Image (cartoon, rainbow over all chains, first blue to last red; front, side, top):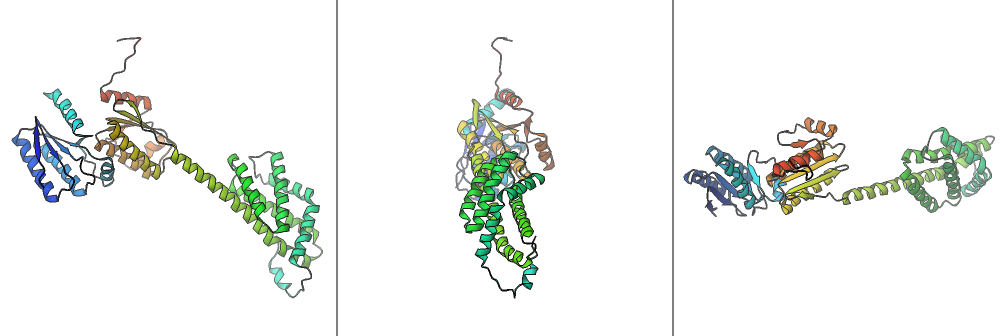
Length: 120
Length: 296
C-alpha cells in the first residue's frame, strides 16, 4: 500500500496508515526525499496519527526521513504521535532528537507557518 | 532465664501436678502480687527508655490493662481477647509513633519480670520451679508472639491504608492558560505513581492541546534513579507530542541524582521555581503579562 504524498503550498504532507510494511516505508522515504527537491518544498509533515503501535523500524525510518530531508535542504515535522506510542518510543530510546514534533496536522502547519513567516 | 537443659535430668521425676494446676497456682501468685509486679514492670519500662512517646500516667494505665490481659490469657489459655486488646492498643499508639521494638520490648520485659518473681518464690524448690516454668514459658511466649503479631499486623494495615491514600491523591494536570498546563508533584514518587503521572500528563497534553507544560517538583524531596529516568522519559515523550516541558523546583538532591545518571541537560528545560517556570512558559507562548496600574 503506497502512502500518498500531498503537496500543500510550500509543504509536503504524508500520512502514515495503520499497517505499513517495511517496503512501504522504504518507498515513502525515497518518495519524500525525491519530491522535496522536485517541488522545492520548504518542509515535510509526516502524520502518524493512525499508528497506534510504532515498531523500531518505523521510528528509525522516521528519523532517517527527517535527517535525509534536512540534507536535502528542508525541514521535517512529525505530527500526531499517540501518547502511548510516545512513551513506548522513549522507553526504546527512540526520541527523534533534532526532529520537530507537533500535536496534530493543524499544529504542525501552524508551527511551520510561524517559522517561515519570519524568514520569508 | 530458665535453663531448659535441667528439665531433661528431671524426666524420671513423677509429675504430681497437672500443668493446668500449675498454671492456676501461677496465676494466683501473679494476681496476689499484682501491684508490686506491675510497679516493677513500669519501672523497668522507664529504665530501658521504652515508650518515650507516652506519659508516665499513660504507661501506667496501659501497663495495668496489659498485665491483667496477660494474666487472664495465662489463666484461660484463650488468646482472642488478648489479640483484640493488642490490636486496639496498636490502633491507639501507632499514630503516636510507637515502634515495633518498643511493643515487643515491653512484653518481653513483663515476661522477664514475672519469671524473676517465679524464681524468687520457688528458689527453695528447684524441681517445682522447673515445672512451673514448663507451664509458664510456652504460654508466655505465645502471649508475646500474639501481641507482637497483632501490633505488626495493625501497622501493616495502617501502611496499606496510607499507600492507598497516596495513590488516590490525584495528580492534577491543570490548565493555567490556553495551551499551558502545570503539573504540581508533591510527595514521594514510586515507579507506579511515576507511570500514572506520565499517562495523565500525556493524555492531558492531547486533550488540552497543550504546547507548554510546567512540571513543578518543589514538593519532591528526593527521587531514585529509576524515577529520575522516568521523569526524563516523560519530558521526551511530551516533546514527541509537540509540547515543551519546563521542570521547576529541582531540589539539590534531585539535581545530584540527575547529574549522576548523566542526563543530557540540553534536553531538560529547568527553571528554579514555579513562578520562573510559568514566566518562561508565557514567553514561549508569546504572552506578555503587564500591570494595569502601571502601563508601560
